[in-house]
Length: 135
Image (cartoon, rainbow, N blue to C red; front, side, top):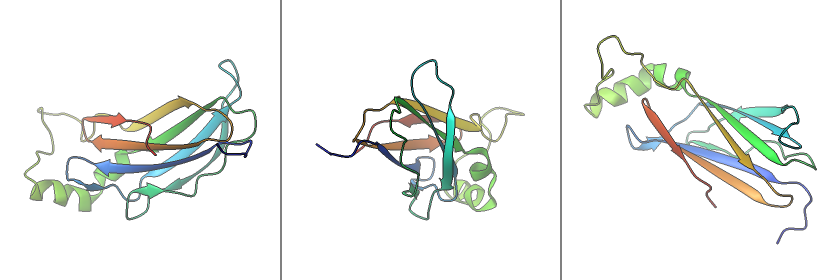
């Protein structure tokens, strides 16, 4: 068990529509000190070439909940990713007139306890996502 009084957070994103890491996705971290408390923005970063975001700030002491906000719409609008979709024979739009990405932002809120590390991977595609507590 860790002796630190603050918790830490890391994340990574896998684009399941092309089977590779999602690079360049903006990620913001916020925290609060109870269910009724206001969110405090802590900072952000972007995923690296391996889809990882390792440099998020530590959570302040007293944090009970954390939230990761992923700005995924810009990632899916990137021409490089559209080319990769075409190579995988993935249709750009499933329905006539549909938006390029159904979930433009993904917000994941989770409970934390002091001294623990939380790795929160995001499995992503243009029309859905899944998240879990990693190690």
